[in-house]
Image 1 (cartoon, rainbow, N blue to C red):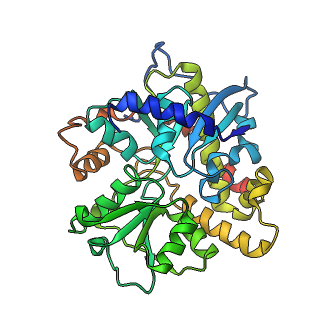
Image 2 (image 1 turned 30 degrees about the vertical axis):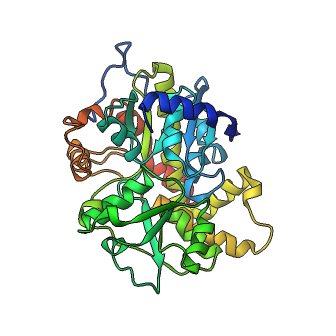
Length: 373
């Protein structure tokens, strides 16, 4: 697997995104453009290696994002016959999606906001949501444990920080405040470069809360000796879902096959992390040695396990028994709760579940049993 940061493409990406925006995915297998669905070849069968580029909004080596690349270190990508290049744009999920729009990546993972909001505003990016690993929210609003903020509506008149403004961090915060009966327009939002900087700013009183991935918040709190609390989700937000994978709607059959192989590797990696977090952390550090501290390794290991644990605890099957499925009803509720029904009257335009059966075509119990060894 190739790991590249590709920071040099961001300037070009801004131009592409601006041009695309004008300003700022049923569970049964269906035919692809060629009239045939990609094959469901068993992962035990030797396969021709396929190439795939995946954009992720994580720091490479960060435990919270580890299932995205652990398939390399754990051997699942080799088993599936896929050669994966990970392009990392930390803290910028909308730009990760932008790489797919620009043809610089084949797949990206992001919150649904970064797909839904532009479409509701008339900007059809030509994307389809194909798989959701998380059946519940993975973002959270962190506040100091000793503070007086008890629920999202208490953020009125407060300053909330995040690593990037707009969707998905800011829209997530707004949904929490609104669902809790507050006025999101009365919340001041600011951008902070890193979670650690945000935690320090919160301790100083410069900000009152921080929106981020819950696993990242947990590890940053430990690293900065900050005692935090994650605000409880209001009902409508608690019933929501989190990040998923998007691809171009005109993705070729060969790339769809590569996506199938990759996502099976992601699910298997998350299962290993659930069953044997020590094994997952060791594999992560073996892949990214510079992410492993040279001092206080025992404490760092515990911090990494906390972050990884928060992330993979949200990897669950849907109510229909499949990994990755979100019902049209849940999509409809998401769109309605965000006031976007007028812009997206039919939620079926958002997703393409033609690959779900293949994503789920592996022996889960065998993976769990092997992970414990």
